[in-house]
Length: 81
View 1 (cartoon, rainbow, N blue to C red):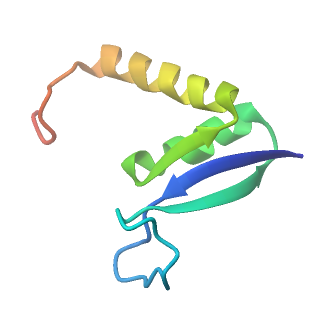
View 2: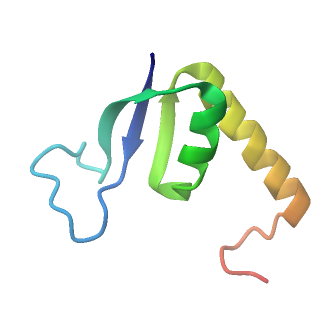
């Protein structure tokens, strides 16, 4: 099984118990079924996760995000409609 290296933000109100990097991120390694499956699972977490490895998964998430920005437009400011 492939391992995913990521950094995540604790959910609001959750104590990080000293696990964060000081910037509010916690690094974690998570087993994934496949890159294809993991793309959808981790995209749904939005800006609350950054995939660090494997590079193929990181690249696929970046590609998908770029396609979404192209489809829906680059507003530049969150909340623009």
